[in-house]
Image (cartoon, rainbow, N blue to C red; front, side, top):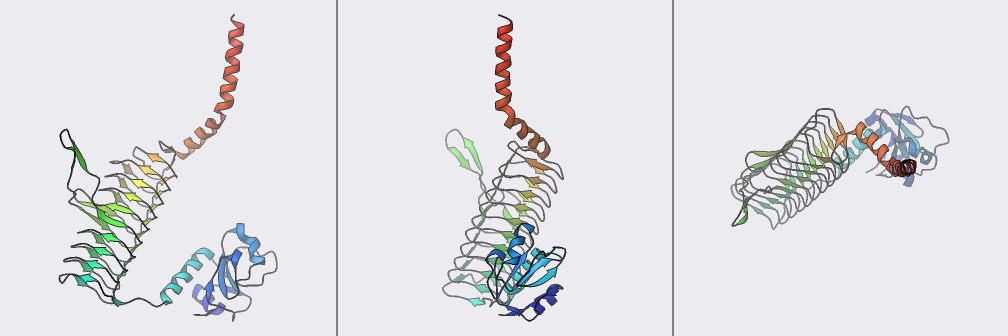
Length: 343
């Protein structure tokens, strides 16, 4: 499908510099721009490519200066990155949408399926499950008994949702993710070793949540493991039983949250960070990459390190840490002088 610069500018309420009739049918990175494609420039670090790119149309911020000759037609907008994202969304919605039920698949007679759904081959939908309107379940998705899925939610191939779990509307769950597997609950027994504690709760995922591939979200021992509205979870994240994560939080790849921890709204848990169980993380907290969190964190804090402490304090500690070899050398020399003096 082709779009003219004028059509794009009208949609984005942008200002055209160049040929309004030029057309594009694809997108490209600005440094790899090709004729017939649209690109964007939001980071000044890539400005040099604006003057050499072969892309036909480039979105740029209104306040970005242009310091050379540009071959491409420019569309100036308030925020080029957000504008580009909205165009990608528009393009995605224009693509053909899958509908219908493929065979072989299994849908229990007591399950309810909404309108305009796509049920791929080898999908299993269990007893008394409820699937909303315009839901897409790609091949090899497993939906256990009593699962509820809201409207417009997408589960990609290989997603497993265990019994009794609830997914809201407008969610996206990527391949290999498991929702509602048993929490890691065992009681130590002198004779039997470790005795399994039944996990009787479920997982509740609210609206507009996106979960990456190969994520594990454990069901609660009792009650619910809960993921708040608008939260985004990267690939390879572990969320244990009875964890609660507030709205619009972000968990980045390989982070892990231990059981019964409560995380507030608008938090960022960076890559490979680990959070112990039974603590509280406040709202608007940022936990840096590879941090180890072992205590409660109040609202609006930035924490780094293992054990995680206030970022400002951690940065000062790191500066001192780098100086330890020189400090040791000076201490050693001072020790020699003192020994010589008191002989």
